[in-house]
Image (cartoon, rainbow, N blue to C red; front, top):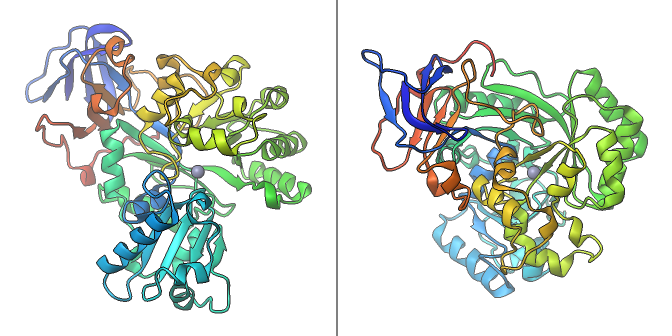
Length: 473
Ligand SMILES: [Zn+2]
């Protein structure tokens, strides 16, 4: 395929020839070859396909079939009860109901008896907004052999998946289509519980053509290496939670053992204490390329020198400013407010910075995250951490860096590169003023057109039979 009349890095017109999943040629004037299909970019900016450096595919797929139980959809106990009762009426008897996004500001802490009062004749499970806690009603406890427990399950996603009925396992196809519409051609799945079963499920979805995006899967210590070019094993994911920190020596040993396996380590840090603890552990264990801190939600000035000295990459979620900024202003210690989801401060300190959405815990639209990185506006329209604002170019770069180096140099459209591409409906100079996913008009994964908004352009190849390059990009 030839993509004609595109703008690349500000130069137009440019043409790009795709062959065998890779970019074969880039030039001002490339003539179509006999039989070659031509895609007219009509002057739109052609960008490297976006990579979302931290999200959770299965949780996202499941969330799409779930009841929203937190702000902004549900803000109080009454709306919460109404939403669950409506779901119960719409669900066939005995079938599971799944709620997501719960926050204690809605109806206080949840447990089994609180949920029984709302829904007793269906097994019900509700996930806290952070993703780490599930609350079950009595019917759900009985179904899972947890009678006599309070119905609160921490870090139990994989455990639940193994025990829930097969029709509960969500397809990734819809999520993949949404990613394609955003111009996302690769993702890093940051779920700590990923193991061999999840890796196999990603590979199956890719082989069936349901998931054209490349996937890097972080996960457990026993996560096997992946055997296809579109799927790679990523970092060992470790989850810190300030209220139950591991023993320091144990964390250091976990990092050392991942490094001995040749794997980088990614540590989830959302509080100041988490970050200080993680940095100290990295310092004791030593760091290697690819080691990263997920979120660094609160990164005050005294944590910066050690992040920088350790050469740790930070993978941030500026989108949370746009979706939760007003709640942060109420709930977060005022000393920490200026240091929430920092961007410019980290870049200036030379800390490699990559971007992500953390879908489904954040809005999965990377353009909304880029916009938040630029305007730093909370839902109430007021700025939060305005000093941390990035330029539109730097915000885009959060999502165009390579999967293995989220804070590295952005990928470029050049011969030999993988043909993972995202085309906008306008020049970059126009798009930068209004970062919107609606400007994405076409997305190619591995040289295959997987989205072409409104143009009626058929898929350029059969994804399931896709010619995949023999070496990973
Ligand atoms: Zn996450």
